[in-house]
Image 1: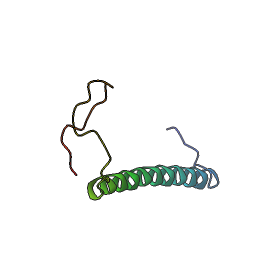
Image 2 (image 1 turned 180 degrees about the horizontal axis):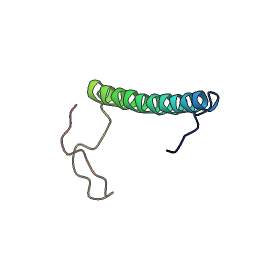
Image 3 (image 1 turned 180 degrees about the vertical axis):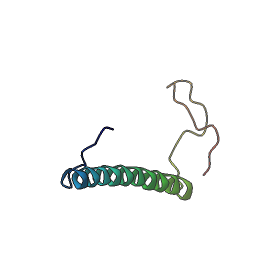
Image 4 (image 1 turned 45 degrees about the vertical axis):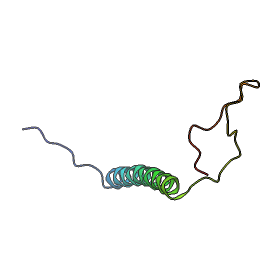
Length: 72
């Protein structure tokens, strides 16, 4: 029969603390990413940009473009 030596009490908590710290760091990073993306989606859905001055008719001499459909 092979006898295994028990793990020392000092090495086990260090491994557990390190693993917990890494897990909390990863969870915090993922949570931060989710919150930032949710904020971007919220702002995109609730804001409407102001009207911008643009050409009302096609100007072929200067090569300028106009809006496809004006919202103003």
